[in-house]
Length: 257
Image (cartoon, rainbow, N blue to C red):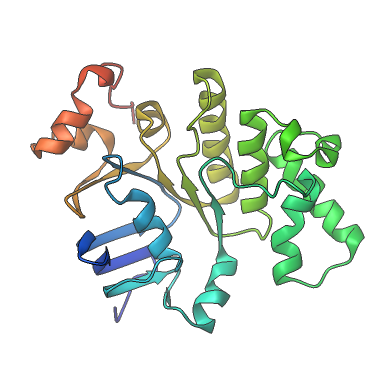
């Protein structure tokens, strides 16, 4: 991808990903702009998480090119170096059960930097406060946290290295509507405050409608529609129409600009 414009945080071209003979991602192309919240939607098992994990180098690809913040993503040292520029919130938080909240947040710091214990404690406290938690929550273990707190701790860990991009995999799954709404508001606030680019895999219609600047629809291994919500609501693609005009999507109304 020669001459990549600086306006894009992520660029994907002609991406192919499969498992044995089953092709999941089929010559897919996608651009994510710097500073936007992009929501990725698709059918269950349709490849949303596979695409995200391929972009960050966790799943090998069979073909195509990926570029994140101007760096090509391959299975090499350059990719590991580029990984310091993104943070990841996996489904269900994926916290280490044997570590305290503070130690979970400090984990990326220990893996990537050489810092004093005192400084790591200060950073962990700052990240806890950033996501709306108290410093004393750092002494708790994951088993002592509610679902909403678990997601906030996982987000604090994703922000530990002050990344330019945050990848969120189903961030509101398992949360009640109030907690999910609070988490959406937190993401929007952090994105504006920190200037983050957010790549959010979700099936949450409310999140797509209230948080995302653009939405990309994944079907048949390709991005079949992308744009602001009001554009996706006008899409004629059969899967997109079924998803956004089904019985559970009556609350969707295009956001006021």
